[in-house]
Amino acid sequence: MQCVRLTRVLGLVAALALGSATIALACNVPVFRFALERWRPDPYRFVLYHRGPLSAADLETIRPLEEQQDKALANVVLRAIDVAELDKPAAEGDEQSALDRRLFAALGEVSLPRLAVHYPEHLRIDQPVWSGAPGREAIASLLDSPVRQELIKRLAEGQTAVWLLLEPAAGGAASATLLETELNKLEQELKLPELTSAPEDTLLVNTPLKVDFSLLRVRRDDPAEQELVAMLIHSEPDLAERSDAMVFPIFGRGRALLALIGAGITAKNIHDTASFLVSACSCEVKELNPGFDLLLAADWEKRLSADGVPIAAPAAAAAPAGPPVLVPIPTGAAQATVSSPTPVVEHPVIGVTFLNIRAWLIAGGSLLAALILVGAIVVFAQFRASSNLDDRAR
Image (tube, rainbow, N blue to C red; front, top):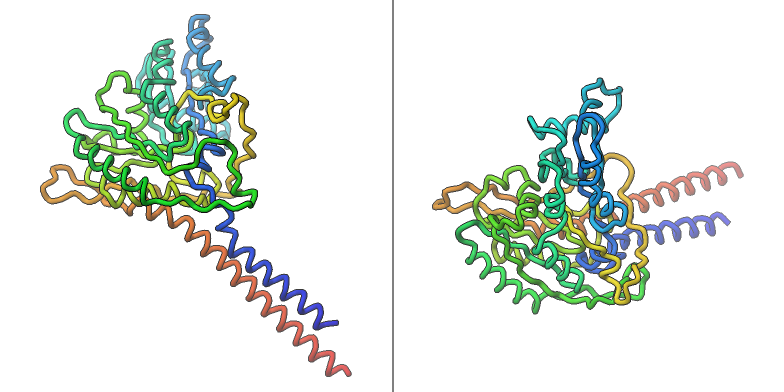
């Protein structure tokens, strides 16, 4: 009987070990497609700072934002804050009030009422994307632009990624030529993961699954795209100070990977980033993946459905409980040559870091398997000790 129990224990241990070692390989849907179907964009925080009651004109001005929020037509969340409340002492542990004070202080001396657009909260960026007097035209430009409409169209059609090239006032042609050459080559070379019949590999929409890249060029001084440009260059502390070309690979529902910059726009970095996007999605929790979402006005469920009926996407995987896990997000910039007038900080290659997520998960599964096997050895040792005691009792 004891031998039977031991056999069952060891069998369970072996099953757990094998299962844990394969957890990381559960989903073969490519990263870009998983993001398109299942990752909802993070909301940008529109905050109307005012003192005293809002006038009827102010309420009418922000009504389009309320409509966008209520109908989920854009990834926005709207709040109105009376700054008189910020002058009052904050209650102990009131983190929201402390955050509101910090964000308002980041605006500097401003006239009221003042509309500010802040990045999604989890990015922890205090500098606003934009701030100014509230007005219908300003709000319309913040929510939409010609380039963003083209970006939405290409992504909804199933493109793997749109490489948005932010060009300086002079130059940028060399980066565009390199990108077009490499992307055309990668479309032929890169292979998609093979989907299985497992539920995790089910595609939710009929959009063709393909490796398809495109280039979208935007001049940094384009007056129609200043809100989009601000959104991009304020995503990292030093980008606004840079004058060289930047390329942001954008995938899913408008998720941008951090930029390849200047000398970092190389064939290798382009290849590594593209490889990450077409690889199997080994980390389904959105918050643990690199990048940030753009502010876009799009009804994604409707756009992704051929008959206009919203897709029934399952609930997104939740972030694990406890303190947030910080994932390194390199910019892909390479070290500048001696002749470059502006030093460029060297970062790890962007694609390699992303691909390591899969390796880390596999390693974690293997470690868990090893721990389970150690536990089995301990159980076996206790079993032997118990058997010896029984023998001596006889």
